[in-house]
Image 1: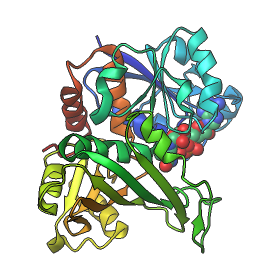
Image 2: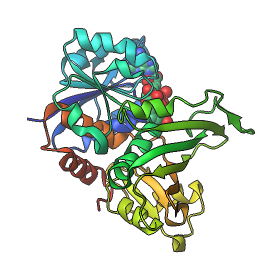
Image 3: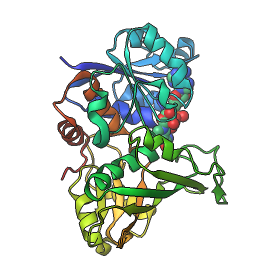
Length: 343
Ligand code: NAD
């Protein structure tokens, strides 16, 4: 029996999560809900996804656009075992009431505060905590990336103190209304909210983050400085460890990947993924961008904000429904279906 999954909110994250669910052997996509007709709604129907009307949308608008409508969002929820809420931040909290009254389980995204769900989730860090839960929140793109990295660093070398500056993309590629288009904007929340968000997964991790927004749409870049309690002798131990961990991609110096433009060009060039998007769902590191200096580890990582949380959403569902015996099994299943190279 496949778990029946609905996706409520079909934007940057929702359309990718829908594709990912449709490609899993143990999940069936009930449908996707959109609030208004758009090219994305059209593509959803062309992909064969039942299209439901969400939010304050009306069936008449979709019918006028010539788009086939399967029903209203309540009908989609009633036909599902779990809803992945991919609506804009803060809207998920409103939708949570509908899921609870409909008796359906729910996965929320990082735009919601942690208390929207029973547990905040990352596949490598705390798969077991989501087991059999009714509500789970997949943390944001930046927190997912930091949690993945902490899952490798903390158990092997111990973390005394982690400081990270998050160089944030100003907008997703389709978001023409956001900026800046010329400027570097410091985030005056010092430290930024990302550290406490990572602590929803690693409560005792000593981490502080700061953030600046820069005019790019491709990726975020994290500048990490970690004081280790049991440092390795050299950086090679660190990037070798990342290399054998799922959901990390390490570039060697000879590949001439100088920054995020080449990373995303690589994502476009590498053999087509089963879900057919030029995404980079792994944390991206550079061999040349890892240094160990005594107890201090320095490393950069680049994060494709549009896609990094997608595999985590799939693993969250597997944990909630007991579809995999443990986290590594789920991660391997997800990565195989999504075409993420698995070490
Ligand atoms: P988005 O704006 O691209 O997509 C949201 C979609 O939800 C839109 O299609 C919108 O029309 C629709 N919607 C609006 N009201 C709705 C309602 N009441 N019910 C259902 N759908 C509704 O947003 P996004 O970037 O996909 O973000 C979704 C969530 O994922 C947010 O919590 C966000 O913080 C989180 N997230 C975003 C990114 C990113 O970089 N874009 C990365 C990680 C997590």
